[in-house]
Image (cartoon, rainbow, N blue to C red):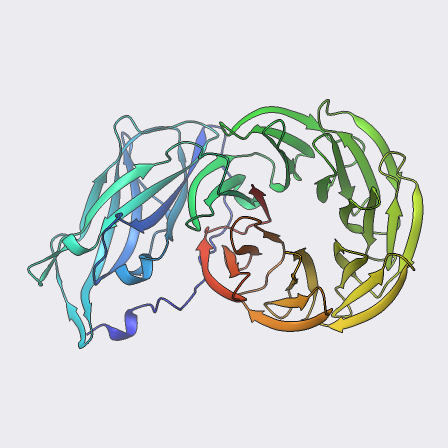
Length: 457
């Protein structure tokens, strides 16, 4: 009996793979496992390897091993494997299966394997082009995989990306180590596709009126312009005068702002023309920036200066400043207050924007980083304590601490779904929090460290 080998659906494990770079004539392929729609079952299998077979033979993909229970996969999707492969045509996925059981209330019944290796046909003329990042989805009919209660003969079929979904119920997650943006269906909390963005993509902004996504590629010092309806890169422009851009936001569909933390620079970029509008040297290690809609100004947190700066959005001249505790990180403007995550002090400072004075500090988790709000509650990632703090925005008090699988960093909040997405870089996954119930759900497995999240709503 293999009771001890079966993964509980409540368990979560790291799927982080070592980063790999694609060469000039290579593409990147990610494989995800999910159940055939309308099918379930009580099968469990152990996979030892996954390969891609083409005209030049078999390419073994990274990852590709683990145990998979039908009831565990049923409520979502599992990351299976990823690889950098030569551009060209491929005909099959090849899976090596080492064990299988039928799970039941009275225990697990071992099954005989019909064959140790399974070949699953790819759609006709499946071709990977140089520079692409593609995802395919292996759908498993678990119920029909058990023959007469004794034989395991897995039924799979492969579905390639159905194209870019409609621009609703969609989020993008950047994974800089593999030069990829994953598309997430927010109605199902599942990966739906992937796009290749060279140069370590991180922060993104969306110009809804032009249906364009602007992606900061930190490694190349570029902003890529992606047509949201097709996923094509239609333009790119160089960020001038700095070598290491570190943070990127926009106040509207035209005005973008880039921080270069190590160079102590803030740049104002016209997102339509791609031209530099202004620049300002600002404090020491400016880490994050947010847009203050109420006062029409930029707010910047400077790490080593232990200060918050309030700036004119056009001239970048300083309007005001405020001292805070050490290591200011995330910023959130809410009603008449500015909330500041003080990363070194493990506190959340609350600054009254009318008096420009800090009126309260809340003890939160270790190394607080980023903030988001749904107008009733504020969510704060705590990198050092692997948790998210929930703060009542009306009472300005801590109401809950939500434990996570690993250290969170960035987060984003949906306005049409009850989700808060939290990046879990050490886990290779995107954390999902139910913002109504204040509990963590199953993470979305990516196999690579996510950097930032963008909702398209």
